[in-house]
Image (cartoon, rainbow, N blue to C red; front, side, top):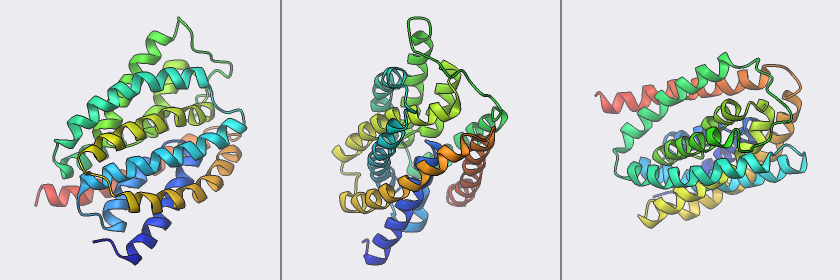
Length: 261
C-alpha cells in the first residue's frame, strides 16, 4: 500500500526524472524504474515498469513541446522512427509482461552499460546539422526504429537512451538535435507500453499522476540546461554516459543480490 510519504517521494522522483529527460532526452526512463522500485517502494517490478512507462511518456510530451519551440525537433525523422517503433514496442511489451521482473531489471542494467559505453566513445561526434529523412536513409531509420521500439517495450521504458544513439547512427544528425527528436518516439513508445501493461492491470494510475506532476516541473529546468550544454563539445554525451553507467551499476548490484542469493 502506498502512503502519503511514498507519494511525496514519487513527486520528488518525478522531478528528477523530468529534469533528466529534458537534459538528455533519454535517462528519464532509466531513472524512473529504479526510483519506483528502490525509492518509492513499489513491490512489483511489472507495476513499476507499467506506471513509469506512462509517466515517462507524458513527461516526454512536455519536454517535446519545449524542444519544438526551440526548433530542435526533426519531425519527419522522428515520426518515421516512432511509427516503426510502436510496432516493435507492442510486441516487446507483450513479451516483457510474461518475463520474470527481477530478470528484466538485471538485463535492463546490462543493456544500459553497453549503451553508456557506446555514447561515451562517440561523445565528440558533431553530426550533420541539415539531416533529412528520405528514400536514401529511411531503409536504415525504420529498422532502427523497430529494434529500439521492441527493446523499449520489452523493458517497459520510454527508450530515449536507446533512441538518441540510434537516431545519431541511422541519420548522422547531431546529438543535441537527436535529443529533441527522440522525444517523439519516447512519447509514442511509452504510451504503447503503458496501455499494454494497463490492460493486464499492471499500472498504478494515482502514483503515475503524482510522478507526472513532478516530472513536468523538472522538465522545464532540464530543457534549459540541455540548451546550455549543447554548445560545449562532448559534454552532453559525457553526462549522458555517466548517468547511465552509475544507475546501471546500482541496479546490477540490487537485482543481482535477489537473483543470485
